[in-house]
Each structure stands twice: as C-alpha cells, then as structure tokens.
Image (cartoon, rainbow, N blue to C red; front, side, top):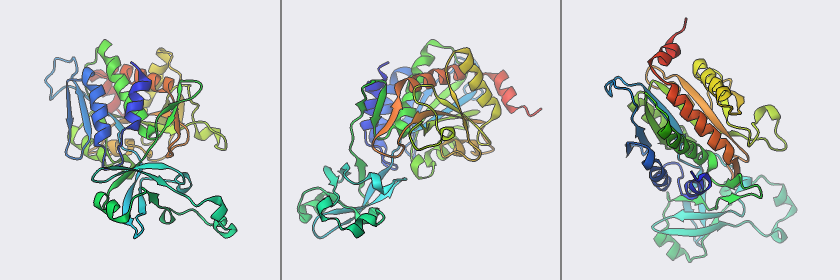
Length: 356
C-alpha cells in the first residue's frame, strides 16, 4: 500500500467540521477494496463494514468499532466588508498567530482562492507589535470587487486552509494540514488491508467520524447506532519537539502511543501492549488521567458504556498547517490494530466484561 499517496489525497481534501463530504469521499474510495459495505449515516459519518468470519448470526457476532475523525479545523465567513474583504470566525481550535500569511479556499457558490494578509512590517507601529493577535482583526483578500465577492460568498460559508502535503528530506516524514486526524483515517485503511490476510471472528466497523473538532459529535451518534462490544479511537498525540516536556510527547518514528487512564479499559490497553510485544511493534505509553480530548470520550459513555481503547499517532505542530507525522508510525499502528481485531472473540469479551 502506498501510504504517502493515499495520505496526500486524504490530507489535501477539504473536510472542515460540519462539511466533511470531500474527505469522506476520498476515504470511502480507499476503504472500498477491503470491506463489504460502505454507507454514510444521518450526521455524515462514514461507516465501512467488514464482516467477521464467525458463523453466528449477524445479531450475535461481536462488534468492533474503530473510529478516526474525518474533520479538520477551519474557518467560517461572518462578514463581507464594504471594500470586499472577508471577515471570519474559527471552527475548532486555532492559535491566531498561525493564521497570518496563510492561503485559504473560500467554499462559496464556487471555490475562491484567498490570502489572510497581514500588514507589511513597514506599516506596523511599535504599539501594534505589542498587541495580542486577534482573529477579529484579520481578513481574507480574494482580490475581487465587493459586488462580485457577494455574488459568490455568503455569511456562513466554510473556509479551509490551503496546503499541499510535502515530504521532508527524509521522505518518511510528511508535513501538511489536516493530518489531525487524516493520519488516523489512513491507519484505519491500512488496518482494513491487513485484515485481508487475517481471520477475524468479529464484525468490524471502520468509522470516519465527523465534527470531532467541535465536540466529538460524530462519535456520539455512530456509537449509539452501532452498539459495539468494543470501541477503539485512533487519533494523534503530541510528537516530540523543542520547548515541550518529554513526558508530554511521543517520539516520531518509534511507533504509536497506547493510552492508559480512566477513559481506557485496562484489559484492552494491556492487550494492545501485549500484542505489540509479540509482533515487535515499538510503542509508547500515553498517560491520560481524565477524559481524553478524542472520540474515545464519547465512545466510552455511549448507552450503558463501551469498553474503549485509544491508539495515537505522534504528530508535531498540532492544529497548524504544517503538522508533521512519520509514515512508519501509521503503518505500525495499522498492523497493531489489525492484530488486535483478529484476537477479538467471545472468550476475550468475557475477559473484558469480568471484574473479578
């Protein structure tokens, strides 16, 4: 599987929270060779179903739910000024300092290329330099007269960051936008391909969830509908970088991180760690003392509760347009995920549900 090519297609697709269709279409195309059915639910979640080998009826087969979110952070038009400049508000968590000088696509009646243009340093006073950067003070320039802009763009239109996925000098490192969490979606596709050569008793639902960046909403509804026996979220964690404490990060290129903590079922975390050892897959432990900021928090508390695990791919520069991952971490996470799914059977579920 050409991880770089598929991930490039995934990451460059537009998929701001609440408008994930383009990203979902790309993911569906790459899931299709490995699953039995693909659908979109009422909220927009992409559900790729792979039937298990168990001879039990579909109502009695174990269900494994694996989620990675399709959506990315983005912007929304909230004003078109009299001189044609577009004002905007964030969708998801942005540091305003990362927005100056970005190129964007305004998704109006047709797509418009634009730039978030800062003042030239020659025109900035010393007092302005000291001021806090605010999104309210920024604008997008589409270089069109106001009348023409208003014919194409309306208040409420979505704006996505424009950035191509690039390989670094070491081609295993990739940088671009939306790798949080298209890297996780890539991991699910890789796991689905790995399961082609493994026997798995359980039915598997690979779910590309929507609106994770604005409250993990897609995970709420899809888990409720599918009623899984086990849930696994695949997301990103902070990769090692200067200025950040080592215990808060995982090293890129050294495998995925396996979460531990109250959001995570101990038996599932232990099983992932054991399988990683058996298959010589390096990993880090990710201590999470509360609810994780991922789909795992929604999966765990669905209906009467779902035993949940979290597998994370180390990523640098989260929530910027230059997020960075290592392809080996995605591949290793996908292999580990596939081996875990192959181990799920009735006996394992009894162990998960036992509190003795």
